[in-house]
Length: 125
Image (cartoon, rainbow, N blue to C red; front, top):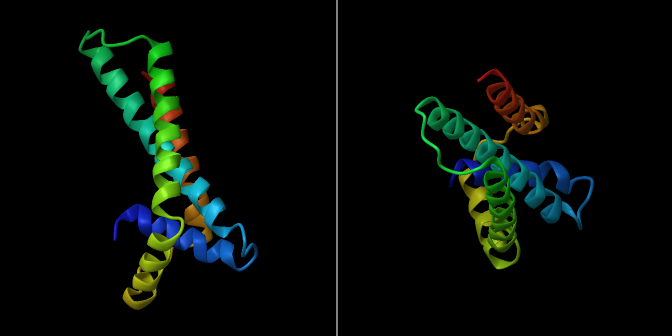
């Protein structure tokens, strides 16, 4: 079980109590936002690193286009992975293995914190 699986099932269990029919969709969107924020952080880090090394790799427009394409790919990957039979099988394993359940505050602050650090890194360097 990966870190992202644990985040998905923590969000799924919190959302399931209020929105039973839309819990999978909302949790998938949440996980995609978290993964995109980590992707943005890595992109900013490597962009600034390569800029300091005086390596000209790609323009800003191409980098943002690549980020958008990767965000769409991440959403579809998560949608396939966490909907249907695979989710039910993993959910049964989660119930038996007792993965750590994260607080709703940690779930909300994780993407916000990573986005804040990414923007700070982008502006400072």
